[in-house]
Length: 390
Image (cartoon, rainbow, N blue to C red; front, side, top):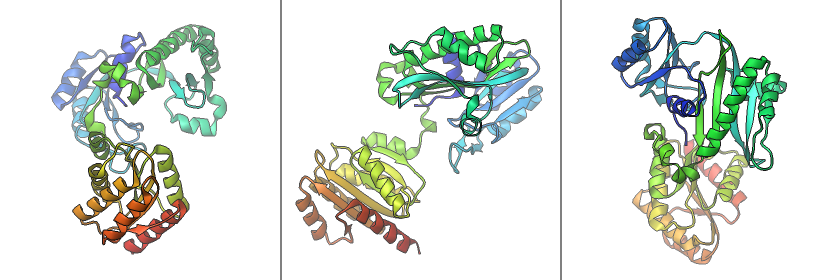
């Protein structure tokens, strides 16, 4: 689960990490009122969406007076901000963060992030703050400094000092930065965060460290332990398809291709998408029906896929175990009839009750194509989809 910058900064503030003073605003009038409450002549108006790259997209604006704040708020609120992280449709800006300006002397990158390979959190720091960390890692990897906790999960102060000195900070700044790192690490442990990123961690004109931006992600599976964190979710930022799938109890992720997929099991879903790619196509979604699906849920999954206008063909790839093949076949037939399916449909099934399933499909009288192997099924749906698009 992601949260907004203003929410992340409130969490940082609770843990003693220094952040500039700011106010959240949902209207132009609230933005003007917030500006009047902040010290200093300079304000920063920042769009609040769950995506990076806001500055390049015009979602972060420096304002010298209240008049400029009013104009910036009017321009950004309600606009659809398109960044490199939120796709071509962009995201509508519904809230702003109005922050006091900071005179910046230097910028660093700092994050505590989950390393899946080590199955632990780690600290990442770089003197190249304010930039995409992926670009820094690719172009100048020597500017990335990492510290891992010990076997007991403890992060030691000397580890923080080492990476901060490597970033070029002086002794006073390293002392302050070490305190920030240890607090950021504790925040992640306490909340089951998988990412707590400060980019940039600014050094101001007086040499103090401030978190000028903040991004936090949390483990969805742990939200039951943290109702206060779960309350920070913004449904307006969630993908409509994924919200609907959650209501249905289906795991669904919308992708950018034209071939809808319905499978059971995350591993099989990944293999199916790979097979489609190898056949020259691209999956439109990741849809895992799970082991407890019934015919109605399968049908609902079809409806969900078909609500995506990019879908031009469908591949059903099932290994029957807990979810029996005949149940899937009944759901496929039900969906095809109820939705008057006209798109190419390829079904490949193996496992429990597969013979009954094949009989159900064959006796349906519908134009359902069947395949024996996953490779054959992927090649078939890619070819049929291309023919249908010509």
